[in-house]
Image 1 (cartoon, rainbow, N blue to C red):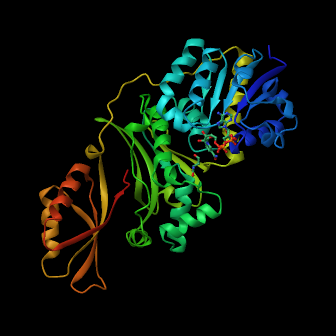
Image 2: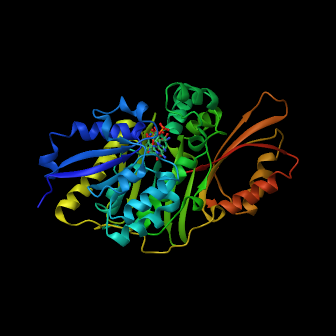
Length: 431
Ligand code: NAP
Ligand code: HSE
């Protein structure tokens, strides 16, 4: 039997909160058909009622008191879109333990405290959903947990940060340097006032932790994910990458290998014919490999008011359906394994290395001899003269090699007189 009204509370009325309010309002006439119930936002937690009043039809639903929400038994769903760790963590936990279902978009929180929140949801058999926490409007958590449940997933990777993808696209298509592209991203509102979490790969790292935990059924937290940002990438690296048939993208990679989970975020060369290479501007895309489905790619808007709200409201609808079918708590935490997580130095990749060396006979042979000592095989090489006399620029792409071995070979190279400088070292994505 469907309830005539299901009440929800919003925590936060910023970018995503306002979007959620609008999407639910836009769906008003469709709800009865879709849910069999009317979904009503009956309270909204804000910090400043006057500021928030302009954003809602009925300002009497605004409150600055969490107690007004947690103590209201008619509210069945809490939608957390405030962000940050505390008080969001406390509010979500209290709501779950009080038997309220929770939807959250908060990757910072879930990537660190996801297990604790799932445990709270388990105690009261309520739903805890967070589709919007990874890749905004793109459905990926739900598909991994449900549509792809029949797979043993070995890889989930992709472009999960729109700001950095916008910057790298400008660097690639318009030959901009990093600082110029970042300034443009800031001017257009893609980059936040403090862009550190985006450009240093931290935002993507949190999403990789959530993706890996969900895809591999084993808990991966943010501190398990190696992160490296795009601040050192230059337009010259991108030009060389193109000469070698690749683009450079900030990739979040999670692999389920026989020796453990690999989870990292770093700029990577990716072959121009890979579908992710043509994901440009602020778009996101997630690529999944499963034993049954083989390859599947999910593409769309990874952020923004309405795209993110789309994912949040999808979760709210799922909960409303569960309430009406009396099937809440159906899919809880799916991390039933405890797989080891590999250190970055134990991962294997190909490497693009741009270096300056003395421009004299025999230097390339010395270089490759050092590589050979550590089992590093060269797949591609470009050598060009530079404006500096007696100096050449050599760019190599290695075959797949252990990170520890490539680092050791580079450390040894640095001791050679003919070796002048490593200009850049970027991993290369290979299947
Ligand atoms: P936002 O624009 O800064 O909005 C957050 C809102 O929450 C603000 O209005 C803020 O109030 C309010 N708030 C914060 N702490 C509060 C508290 N203790 N009590 C009451 N209200 C409080 O942030 P957002 O972009 O909407 O992001 C919200 C969440 O969604 C974050 O977890 C973010 O990571 C996630 N997310 C965002 C996007 C996106 O595209 N923006 C995409 C995916 C996921 P004040 O205005 O007074 O500060
Ligand atoms: N700052 C993020 C991005 C959006 O640029 O993709 C929120 O996850």
